Length: 464
Image 1 (cartoon, rainbow, N blue to C red):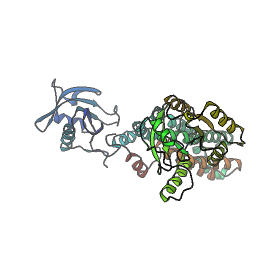
Image 2 (image 1 turned 180 degrees about the vertical axis):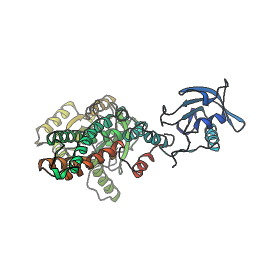
Image 3 (image 1 turned 135 degrees about the horizontal axis):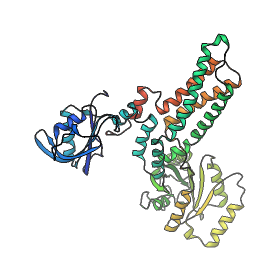
């Protein structure tokens, strides 16, 4: 990849549409566009001020191809920090292809995935965490995921880490200075101030690390496992939640033999509902494999939705099953299904029997529903909206790479804290401080490698 080339790509989604945008970036982007564009008013692109839009005709060689709008963004006031030209044309697939090909014939090359944003990073228009947030923003499918991406794009994590890194860098300089005067036994870095800074860094890192479980779940969709015995109504519940016939429903036990997944946004948060095979002992090899997969999905779920048919499962059996699947890191929700087949007295008796059983420290919520009732399903959705608490004003870590770097940074800063406590020499403190600075720097891009950049930007779409 030569970053000095002028690059071109379709920046809107491929396929026919009302309009499409072809983007060029590089030193010769305006010069190239001028060779194939004729303004309706005789104006030259090269003579226009930045952030101007001109109406005119685009020519493929000498043949009129389309009526277009051309937008000019001159360096450094552009997304990439380079000269950018954006050609807005009609969304014919043929027109899109011909514009891109014409521009290539005049000297541009096709952009690599994420190359526009890579150039924005290299030209210091954004840091690395913000660049990654661009991809998250494009991929966001819920209000909450969108909020996190925008927060990161605005420098939510970068700002707090940058401030801490700057303060730690000052102390690192003083520690390094002490090494130059090691024979004089002089201390330039106040250990009490350094200890306070280390405490601040550890507190910030802990908050960010603790937020990853929530941030990652919001970004990728919160996994909800629908589990229970065969014919408890799991598949019927999935269909009712999604309002479509996603899963096969039958009176025959063991209909669901593999997990079925689909997503639903509730209260601005995306949930991934996973219908699983019924929990029971079986001699059927295929069904047994499904039961094993149910356990795996249950172990990975943030919310376990245990569906019970009270006509075929006693309260004692229900509580025993809840105990077996209880995890401190997962929310447990008991759904008593088929209430339409029970009398009011039978429902009350079942509830009293449940509450009368010894449940130790078992924590779960109970909801009574009928999959035939839209009102019950809506109430269940409302119940879900209160299962995840997240603060819209705080930065949440949702990126796996950031989380890994923060973990390593925490280990290093813990060593610094221990070194201060044990009065270790300046050279040993300096090693751990440098490692902390390095890990924090990899998040925002002060420290980076070609491998890191390659892994990040190859996951971008072409044109961004």
